Picture 1 (cartoon, rainbow, N blue to C red):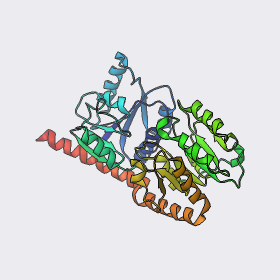
Picture 2: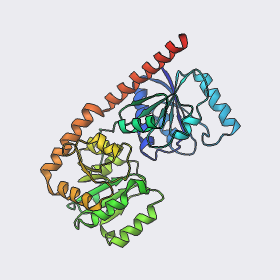
Picture 3: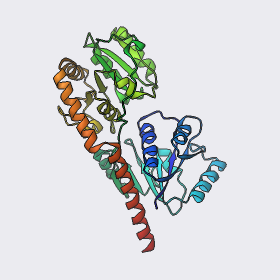
Picture 4: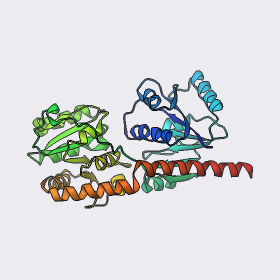
Length: 348
């Protein structure tokens, strides 16, 4: 029987990897996986996982204090996992040594400095697998799918954010940092005089994005919504979802838009390029090119037929490759195979 400890250095559900964990762990629980979560205290992650029936402990994982080290080791000995799955780089450094297979769930391009202890990696795209292979990672690197919530939710009405019902509405979600390219979205919307833009997120670029909005003179058409825990409710009201990133490892927002039946325009970075078949399940534009983004948005907003075609293509892609059932099956098969191989290696 497979027994998994999920080691999580996040305390909050505050980004793409954390959001995926918040979907995957409950889905694995529903599928009957024996799992224990160890999360960083101080946020909503532990409470959320427990609310879904997952036994969850909270210990400080970001600092090497003696009590936390002892407590984590004790939890491993007591639960006796045969696989440890670490989320986020520092978690990979906090997995204690033992007879369990150490697997790092990796969601971003970076060096190998945090993954010296990892025996295997799970990544979301082939491009990321090539990246870590080129850096010299010696273990197996496996691409496994993400998924989105397909349940319909009560929408956040446009008037909540002083947005006309008839106005073309573009939505962007994510961390406010330069890599996410929301400045590119602002410059593109400035070229579309009738369009409104909702930006849901927070981060170090918050002040810069507000300043750029004022500089472009589009403050009357831009709404900063802060960090939201209800992306589906926002997506439901949008005419198009934009992913303008300068670099994007996957683009969970794309899956969320497909699930809610909203067309997507995304930069031609590796993640979106892996997910999207151009002109079938979304539109790709040249990264860092506001004019190209504006043209792509104008196409979708101006053509209901194109939008419907992209929606149908996205839903098909979601159903065939990125559904909850497909992801859960892939993860459970992976866990069983890895544990079986470890047992054979140990016995041999």
